[in-house]
Image (tube, protein in one colour):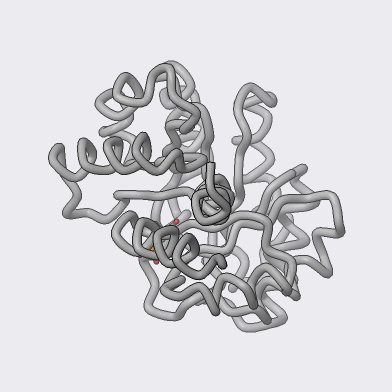
Length: 230
Ligand SMILES: O=C[C@H](O)COP(=O)(O)O
């Protein structure tokens, strides 16, 4: 493998690609799987109802099939989130995201926000990795600190910045704040509005360890990373 291929491939192994917008349908899911296999991306995510379509398409590959809980608002009742998590496990999910209840965080009801996430983590019981989405674009810095603390208190091993459904992109400052609270041992996945290699480098410097990027941009950025290598 040439250095060019290694650089692009190393980046692909840090990127989750996704088709998780409301308009995404069967063709998008099939295209997602094709790109995941061709690029050897670390994971590919679809909305829950599409997981039974995606999962067999990725069988035998190095790409995990992922799907979110309580997506995109986080506002589902806790028992609904727990049921959705169990349903995803039964459907063969290999990685899961759960959206924190943003409204609870913004209301300062942090114990309730923590319990909500903890209930999902307890239902999953370590069977697959779970990332807790904080939806940073809807939080000021103080609320972001609260959300990150709630995720850590709930037992999260991995924190994710955004759903990609909010217009404000994830910034290095968001990641720095989360890293400060999450400590060194936890994964931080930066996602939402990542469109350039320069952005990826500043997010890496800030403490991100993984990225969530929609498929078209992810494929483009991995190709650029390959080209950028001497
Ligand atoms: O991982 C979450 C989203 O898929 C990111 O979407 P985006 O790159 O369009 O913001």
